[in-house]
Length: 155
Image: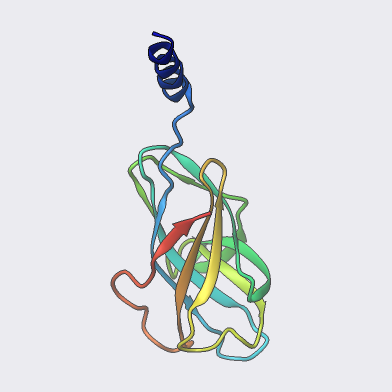
């Protein structure tokens, strides 16, 4: 009988444990390298919400000394780039970081950031924590890649 109650206590503890929200998924991560050395690169990707709304609060890379998230807006026929502190990710919704819209600027890239080598990105969310992706690198004048270019993992 004692064994039976011990099993019930374990089952109750498992049922009472908080359920972690499914982490967002990151697809199509790529980085357009700068045309001129010393200029910033731009990172693009799509974030897919997986059942719980979240907020992307930071994008970073070990191959950049600094990163900033930006959005592009058209004001009076002039494109304007504005820093943003975060981006809301709706549950079961997609948010694209793409040319002409939201993107991450990567400043002062390390020499290891080169064409054809994956560039690691860390996307930090308020609820899900940090998700790591390897972004495809392309040259400044190359067309944007199509299709899923990256895997991801939560850490």
